[in-house]
Length: 448
Image 1 (tube, rainbow, N blue to C red):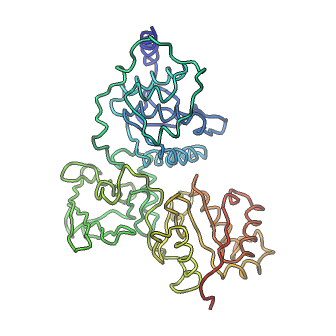
Image 2: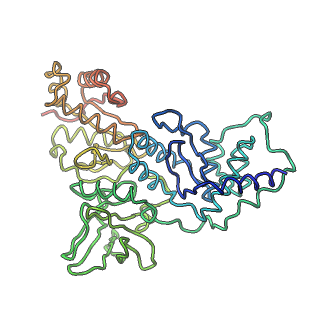
Image 3: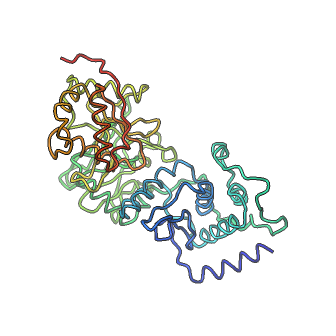
C-alpha cells in the first residue's frame, strides 16, 4: 500500500537529512524541512524559479505550517529570491521573515508532512487534493488561482491507504501567530539594525518601525511616521518603556514594554519589539496596534514619513508631487511634504526614497515637475556625466530600481520632452533603469 511505502521512504530519508525550520536558500533552491525543495534553482547563478509550479509551492508551505498560506506571500519570496541571486543572504532572510512565516510548528512532524506531500505530488496528486487531504480547504480566492488539471493526469490510485490522518499536528489555525520580530534570525536582525542606524529618522517597513538609535536612560520620544497619534516613550532614568496611541477624542492607550534578553515584551509576554545590533530598536506595530496594522492583511506600501530632502512647499515641484499623489492614491493621497522609503544596504543611508507608493499595487512612484524639461535638455550632450542633473537622475534611477526589487517603478513627467529624454537615457545606459515606466501627465499648476 502507498501509505506503507511512504512510511518506509520517510524513515530512510530522515536518517540522513538535516531539518530546516523555515524556508532557506541553498544551492538546490528554496528548501524547507528535511531537504524538501519548494522551488528549484534553475541556473548556475542561483536564480530560483518561483513561478513554475506555484500551486505546488503554496501547497507545500501550507502543509508544512499546518495552515493555509496566503498567496500574498509570493511578493516577499520574489524579493528574497532576487536578493539571494545577488548574493545578499541577510536581505533574503529578512524578506522571508517579514513575509510572516517564521518557524514551522513541531519541526519533526512538519518535515514528515512536507515529505509526504512532496512525494504525493510527485506521484501525480494535484496540489489542491493534497491540501484537502491535510484538512486545509482552500479559500475561494485560492480556488480561482489553482491550476486546472486534466482528467487524464495520473492520480494516486484509489484504495492506496488513508493518508489524511497523517497530516494532523494539533495546531489551532485560529490561534495568534508569533510576532514578526520574534521570528527573525541573526542575519535579518543585523540587517535591520544596519538600516536603522543609517537612517536619519524613524521609518516603517511593512509594519515594522525602525528607530535609528536605541532608547537610553536619559529618556526619549520616538514618533511613528505617518501616525502622529502614536509614539514610543522612555521616561528619564526608567527601563520600562511605553507605547502610546491617542484617539481622536484625546484618550491615550498605553502599552508597557519591558526589556528581556534583547526583546521588548508586553505584560502578556508577547514580543512587541527587539533591540537591534548597532544601537537601534524595532517595534512590531501589528502587535501594538492590531486594529490599524493588521498582521493578516498585506501591506504593500511603507508608511509615509517627512521628506526632509524634498522640494519646498508651494514650489512648482511640490505642487506637481501633490498632483501625482492625488492621481495614484485618489481616495487618500499621501500628505504634502511626505514620501516613502525602501531599504537598500549598498547606500550610505541604508534607504532609498520615493515621492509616493500606489497602495493598490505597491508600485513606487516619483514625480518630475515642470523644472525638469529645460534642465535636462540643456544638458543633453552630457549623457554619461557623473555630476549635474543627468548624473543625479542616473544614480536615482539605479538605486530606486535596486531597492524596489520586484515592485514596479513609475516616473511621472510634467513635460513630454523630459520624458522622452529620460526614456532614451535609461535605454542607453541600461543597469536595470529601463525597468522604470515613464508617463507624461501635464502640470496643472502655476509655473511662476
